[in-house]
Length: 168
View 1 (cartoon, one colour):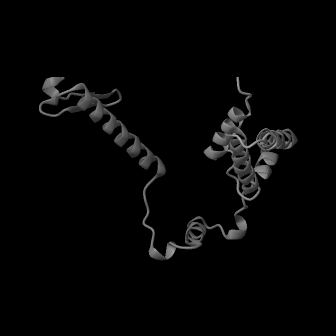
View 2 (view 1 turned 180 degrees about the vertical axis):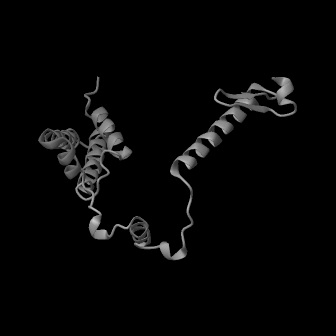
View 3 (view 1 turned 90 degrees about the vertical axis):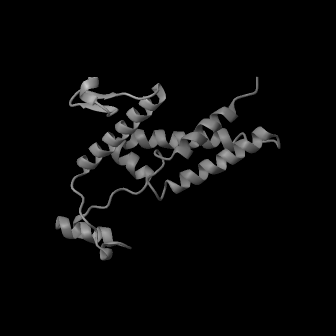
């Protein structure tokens, strides 16, 4: 292997990975991680396909939609609008049970936070802040479908559950 590598510090073993040599474990590991990341990005680039140039007139408000319609032959009328709200998405994907569970989740989260946000101590104020933030996110989900993908929503649910615990 060393004869094959010569003065190089990396050897690609097609279909089997790589062999890395370095002056230390840290440098070999760093080189391995860099090659892994470059290979991953290369794979993703090839998976996307051949890049095509975008002209200046394709940029700006509505430019992408028009270019996409021109390239695919679909006009705006042929493109079905996607659901834009979390409740509509839940209803279309899981029906009535999903809507009931979503409503339960929202009511439980708001009850735990706003229903128990009494007192001027730190926990009561934290519950109030968590509840108001959750309420804002839930209202926003009526207009945009990003509720379940929003890490802040899940973090607030966890913090609300922690704040709802009775002190030991």
